[in-house]
Length: 471
Image (cartoon, rainbow, N blue to C red; front, side, top):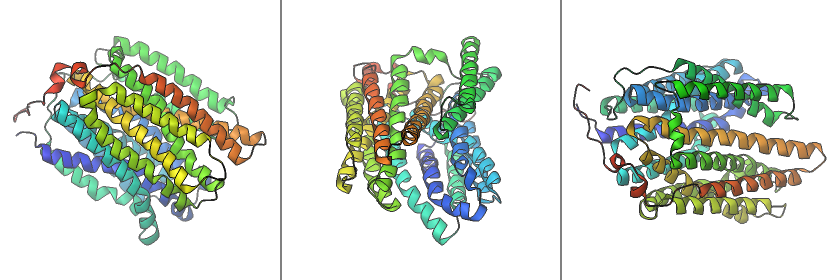
């Protein structure tokens, strides 16, 4: 039986929509959840538990799909995600919800990572670029719909349906992918799991994430609860690198970092992730606390961010094949830097039109950066490392976002403690973001010059031949 791309594409589409909507649906439902379950003191861990487990597992799912096949890994991840979703909806306490959200995150780490890898498996260079652009645009659109859906379900049905809604669509995705996908990428005949690397990586990144999240909420980064996990993380990740150098089937192939495009994608993804998550987190706060906008009004101002991202993702995916990756990434980073410069000039007289214009520029910058770098990495690596390489781009962007929100939050907290008002404190946050964007702009020059075909491996230019039955 051959792979049926149409079924697979619809299944992947549903999976990516679920992944994109998950955080935003839950965000608008959480006030109702707290009213029902209580636990306001651990409110933030509903988000942190999901972020922690989904981030840690991104590279693991990508590598497991390389070693054991996309189909099995993807269906397993989706199943875990749906079980976590259903149990979250059944939660009777905030402790239950946090635990089930962590389980949900374990599966969520596979959705976009393996989904984007499957699309790269199925199509050659030109079709792959178009498809990745469409899927990135769909991710943005789903993120925009999520808050509206979460609010509607909480107000008119039940907050529990913010989780239950995943089940029918996820089940449809499992059916479509199960029926349509056959593994098209070669893989080892007897794959082995790198257990020491898996344990060290999971423990190291978990410690790092916990330290960063606590740092963003702590009045001091010098507190033992913050520095302790970060110090443990560096020790564990140092040991992980040592283990990976000797592992026959490493969880994260360090040889990938020898490729200029991978190094550039990691650097630009990390730094742009810091800026992007900073913008999403602190722009609404500025609008509400300084300009006295309502929560709905602040959310409405962020709409151009998503629209700019969606449109530029689709356009840049096509342009990457004509003009190369480097010029697009540089243009995107210039846009992002310009946006943060505009943010840093905001004050109490800010108008809604000016705010929307600035966030539109930021969204356009992200759209011109993320998709070209994803396509570049996928075209630069051998098929047996495609899952690992795809997951790296997502992983470092998410880690960058966590670092960005933590550092910017610490800057705001420090300025508030020293007597600054909220406007001045948020001005400091945006100046930090501007400095990060300048670094991101410099990192864009790491992207090699040349056309997409010149930088691609020969086998990346052609679509793979779907396997026959028996593989």
